[in-house]
Length: 308
Ligand code: FO1
Image (cartoon, rainbow, N blue to C red; front, side, top):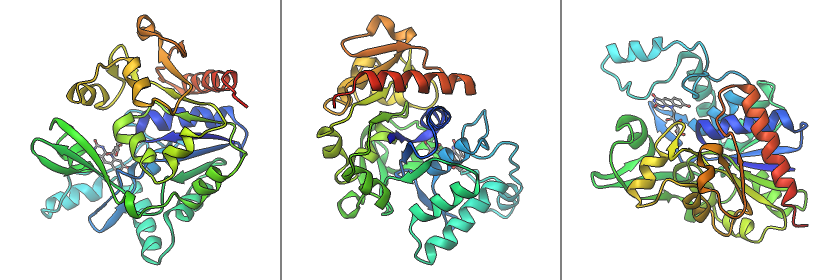
């Protein structure tokens, strides 16, 4: 079993490549739920949905989130009525939130709802939330503490980040499937996807037990840098690194994951900054072929670092 840790669009795209490169049953994608929130009375799970739509081949190729060919009639109508429409929920996407909210309200855990949605959309690999318990990313900025989607969408990542915290981790457990994997000897390796390390991967690492499990690993673990030439392909990774007084370079990513990874995949544009244990390749994923090629290269690299 290969485990991918993912969140956001870059993470979902590599997870898609891994899903194409590995046979069904040999990949589990553990997804960040720190971005989840309740909005318009609905339970919204942006990263799990982005991974689900991407693996199902339904994701919008430009935005990366939501459904391709989506319409936003409900949002338009909501706006006319003076309702909150700063967070765009597409008409088809709304079905996901409505059905998930109904089932959560009946007491069903997020894990089983996600497993069922994924199966219905024809996904043959495991896609599991990091936890079934609510964990919420809080962005601490000079302008105050912001819930994640307020920072990300409402304020377009403009406020400078001082630090991040993950509310709820004290009372949270890993999701049952993640717990089983952490106890099992079936794990052949872990791939940390080119997701934002601070916003998308750190919440997963903050789930009780996950960081110690990786620190004590008997399998190799690699990360793919989300940076290309000192910039993020999408999203605020480089901006956040500057705010945290970090150099937007591969070494800072490797330091961030110190003790957790055995190697880092970096883009050829950053080859001058390569160091120690690095695989240099093209990490830009423009199309399906790129996703699959990068996934296969990452898997070979992971295999080459096997420590048991
Ligand atoms: N991102 C935006 O920038 N604007 C939106 O209106 C927006 C709506 C949205 C709806 C459903 C969904 O699953 C994702 C959505 N996203 C939107 C993306 C989301 O904010 C981010 O992808 C993640 O939370 C960061 O990884």
